[in-house]
Image (tube, rainbow, N blue to C red; front, side, top):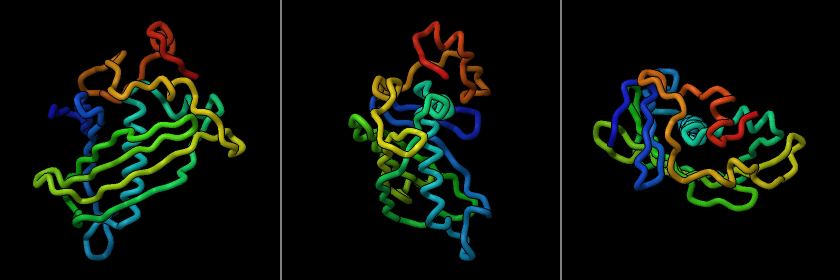
Length: 176
């Protein structure tokens, strides 16, 4: 697995078509016992989905400007072992199902040092318009490759930087 110097660390194992990012557990993430509060894993899933899309040059803000938002229609979380304050977790994300109007993302969260599975889960998101009515996935999501695209602009210390619109258009990417 490749490593990145920046935080959150993220990369893609193109053989598995997944994105892996890291998250450090802070005191604010835990309950009174020092264990990650159970609902926070859904927040980590959300963050990982955003990075997964960004890694494929799809910005959620551009989708919103184009009239598309997402509603979670189903979520599952299976708790396997506790994560604690100070741990660093890796979150592996992949798309496991795509229909005309939905995407299902699956997530595996591991404690980085031991590689022990902490949580496994998934979320199905429906594409809806700004009034909340179901709509077909926008073209960038229908055409989204399973593996990431090479970055258009990728300074080594800023992997999450996005390309200017003119460069994105030149490479056939839709934005805004």
